[in-house]
Amino acid sequence: MDKFVIRGGNPLGGTLRVSGSKNSALPCMAAAILTEEEVVLENIPQVRDIETERKLLTSMGAEVELGYGRAHHRTTISCRVLSDPTAKYEIVKTMRASSLVLGPLVARTGMARVSMPGGCAIGARPIDQHIKGLETMGAQIDYEHGYIEARAERLKGAHILFDKITVTGTEDLLMAAVLAEGETVMENCAREPEVTDLAALLTAMGAKVEGAGTPTIRVRGVDKLHGAKHRINPDRIEAGTFLVAGAITGGDLHVTQCKPAHLAAIIAKLQECGVRIEIAGEDQIRVRSEGQLRAADISTEEYPGFPTDMQAQYMALATQAEGASLVKENIFENRFMHVQELVRMGANIRVDGRTATVRGKTPLSAAAVMCSDLRASASLVLAALVADGESILDRVYNIDRGYERIEEKLRGVGAQIRRMGNVF
Image 1 (cartoon, rainbow, N blue to C red):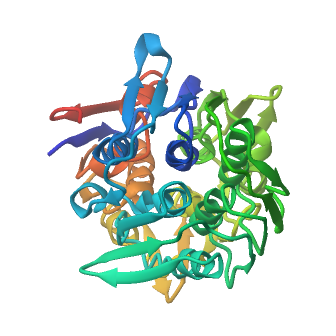
Image 2 (image 1 turned 180 degrees about the horizontal axis):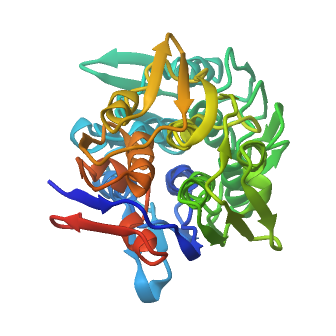
């Protein structure tokens, strides 16, 4: 099992390139189910979840080519034949995005059998909104042995009001609606850039979608979609993680191939902490810090608010800020598992329900710590970069799910980090 060994104390300096967004790539790969023609996706990140999605599509009968290096992170997907519209448990047990194939499978083949989703153990991730929406569109839903079975001759356009904002629910039902008969209106939709990225691909495939990126999305169903080529958005969470890396180490970093407009909440909070941020054009941000950070409170919200996927990384930063920072987690009820590991490194953190109080500035010391989930892993990497001594991070397969060779990128800007074990 791979580990990271990190010696802290080096300010980071140089250029870090942001990879494509895993959370955009996964629904876009699922969207290929909707057509018999080839879908080509560029800027695909080389991470574990993408490989899991490849295995999932291949198990259904699709042909999937994943290319890196000279292929410029491109994947070509052909779902001309879907011989087995089943998302098997043994493939999807580590990835919650398995639910994203439910809508497109029913829309394309008339049936789907999908294992209940897995992924990080950060709290309940119910798919009741997916089910409710599909039933409103005329699907019959059954449950058997941990699987959801959905059937419909052809889905019908409907009015769908989400009881709560859900990114995967919005994406799943958007894909279902593009081949449904008639018009579908979805309200209280997620506004995340990943939703608009998916909508852009679907539009390129011939779908009729209006309002993506707003609370109300309208879809006029079509009989058939065609192939398309689409470039995946840069990963805003990886970009945010790199901005924190520059800030927490007192470094000077250029974070490139990102979209500053997608990072507004993160940038505003870093500036409140005393970090110097410069937007350099449409795809580059410079982050500079003298290490004199000020405490600031955050409260995670749906986009465009402060993202839950940056909460753990911000908490690592808060340990190095003067004063008390309140960190309130509103999205997931069990997303403080990194706290006990940060405390082992010397952090002063108290948790009361969904609010953590972080008191700084506290010196961190190296320790052996456990990576419990994807973003918790990133927070421990950040803490280790400023800790005194050599930290060992175990179970880094969690970070491999969503960060592309993060140790190589950080080493390129001055971090003392190495991997022990074999790359997946």
